[in-house]
Image (cartoon, rainbow, N blue to C red; front, side, top):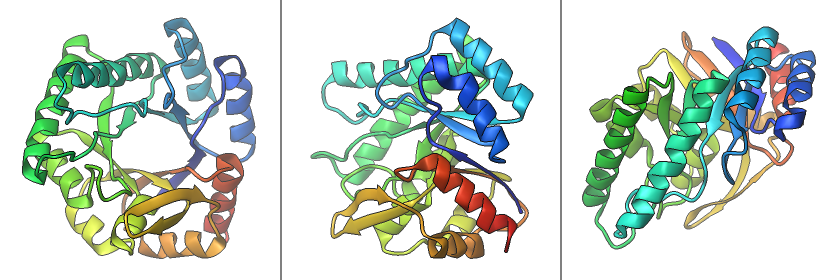
Length: 256
């Protein structure tokens, strides 16, 4: 099993190169650039940062902005959501970041099948824009931890199969949504060689996810026991201190 560990977060553009060098010293080989509150890099910055990331051997990915609802009944909100994701795709292309992780939206008043079809249409539309612009990126729908949010394991795997989009398995979200990690279901539904993943400790309740918390050694060991063999896996830490958390996960994995 090949695993690359890294944090969710690269910091401001002016600090990114120094942070990449620090991550390398810690043995980390991945990093997710958080555009969750907006795309904060320009093309020229992205090109420079991407060049350094390749030099130090760190695989970049991108998390698109949070303010997304591809199932809104308001056309303006849907178009604004698509625009935010596509802007993240554009800058990710210049960064050399392949995977674009995003949240789709809410069920709202619609039944789950109608929600699925609405989101499938809009993901397909975005994939056409990506293809037209020749951006070297893959839209990766994330498994979600709250039960009123689109993004169950089954929904994500179905969308991957029917559209050809990518995926991000957030193991903490799966645990919060189902009350268990569902490792065997994940292995059954996601046969792909490469897995892009998120992990952390998590608090949850009747409605699913409450908040991400520090990952314990027990959490890490449970994950390593459940992961499939023969895959190339990237694990991005979304714990409150993701750099420390990713380094601890790497250390535990290396000392198994």
